[in-house]
Amino acid sequence: QSALTQPPSASGSPGQSVTISCTGTSSDVGAYNYVSWYQQHPGKAPKLMIYEVTKRPSGVPDRFSGSKSGNTASLTVSGLQAEDEADYYCTSYAGSNNLVFGGGTKLTVL
Amino acid sequence: QLQLQESGPGLVKPSETLSLTCTVSGGSISSNDYYWGCIRQPPGKGLEWIGNIYNSGAAYYNPSLKSRVTMSVDMSKKQFSLNLRSVTAADTAVYYCASGPGSVWFYSYGMDVWGQGTTVTVSS
Image (spheres, chains in turn brown, red):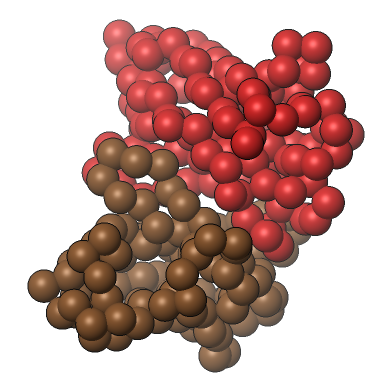
């Protein structure tokens, strides 16, 4: 199985919006509405930010939103804040009880 | 609230078995409220799903690791565990325990409780 494709880096200034893409195939991202996003600060465990493409777990700010078009899912962070600087990973169901992660994107707040 | 704590060997020799134990506190491991999972992260690299297990015993593994992985739940000890056989240097990573709501498929909601992770190095 191949990892989902994410850009290695993304950046934005405080207050701006930034979108991170996650490209898969018609067998994973394109086939199921089971895309999740995780935020990971250096040396910390990941934190679930988005599930089922667009849904936010309780406690996640509504500045974080998810979407999907075809084989590509996206995470948008609006009103960037310094604490949003972290690595972000997407994951998708790939059928047959299999999960696949993206390679991760380092988000820098300028 | 639910908390997870990993305990691992720190150092494992090539070809041996890596055993990771995750201790559950702040919640009932014996209820069907949770499923359990293991994820790893090689140094400087991204996350890799290893597998998930429900209290029913139903377990699901990454196809690339499936031949070497076994997960189990010990409710009496409030622990779940991972065994990874025939390790090589490529298995060197931070290993995380995680959990999600047991009422749904593990791939739908995702994992919302994580341990702090434990570093395992494979070296002779």
